[in-house]
Length: 267
Image 1 (tube, rainbow, N blue to C red):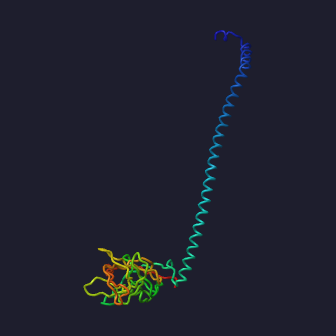
Image 2 (image 1 turned 180 degrees about the vertical axis):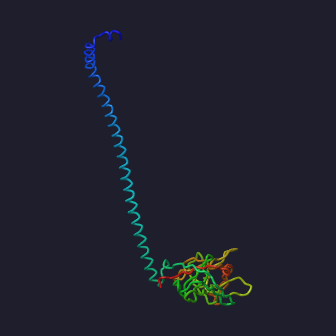
Image 3 (image 1 turned 90 degrees about the vertical axis):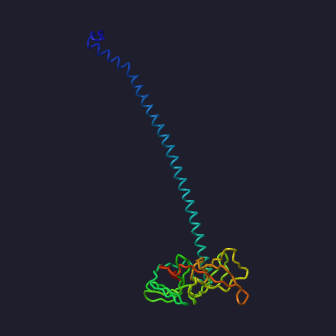
């Protein structure tokens, strides 16, 4: 260090210039190495990025393919359902039935009850103002209730299934053969009940059990399977060709507050 201080300034410049010239190739090489390292690192990163982007692209293509297949599958299912709907319409026309899916529910409140011995009716708070028509079915949470008997502008009269004039096609649950249910009126001190007199001879009541009577869709007034009542005992009919029975109805029939009218827009 002392020797460097004793060297004249001119020589220092010469020495520094020579030193710089000597190290310049080394510095340049070092710089190039750094550049190459950065370049190859960038190339490596770009390669990994490209690979990842390629994988993303493949996943997107796969998703598009799956979505396309799903769309095609759904379109096929829609076509199947459309054909089934046409077949159902054709079958209903051949049987002269209104389509079941045309029945639209209309909720109504009970405003009055008429309960003499043989004629039981309910008054509800909806009528022609809600397009309710005579003969339409009436149901509730307990099952089938009755039919619309009379319609005025803002109210309707419901003929209950206990009414002696009430008739409806029904069947025993699990047996599609039709039977005819009719109301029996209300006898003082007895539970609500009705009658069926055309039960096939091969039907029997299970031991310690009962037969459940439900609605039939024949006629188009009610959907299939609405609860009507239960049979606990069968007897031979007067003509001997069929069996007859009392149908025990729900006790809740006397306390109904709300009902649903099955409005038939087909008509």
